[in-house]
Image (cartoon, rainbow, N blue to C red; front, side):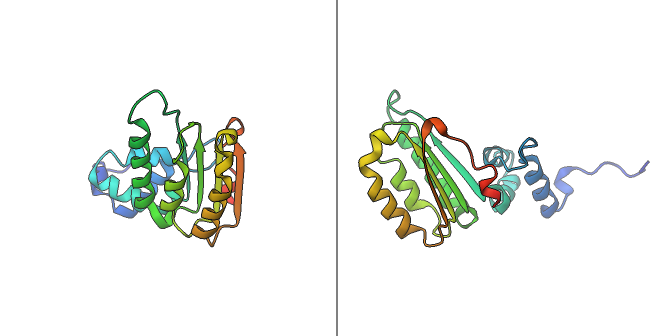
Length: 170
């Protein structure tokens, strides 16, 4: 046994704490990162916040799921502001973006696409297209203009939503 006293986490080097945070955010069943956990871990302290938002591995694949906003006034705007802040904060780290829009509200997808980094390689839009179908040509044009590095675009119906899983690892 080691006779040295235990080390407090504040004594660990930033690189080691960052690796621990990334390891804690890995989903053991799929082996992929759970970005929501990275966000939650960032709330522990200022140091963890800095380390979490600078750990690119936590933000390579981001999934944003818009709930139904219709019942709560102001909910859509608060949700959108939070997600726009997140996209700007993790900017160039995001390579794969999935946006799930279960709401009938218009104007949710466009601001998110405009805030996403231009280096995005994979984009998945998952929604009830019946309500949003008329805006599809504009969304496709916006994606083509905003993301010159895009190699994969997936359009799915909200009922068939699944997260990136294997697609983000390709």
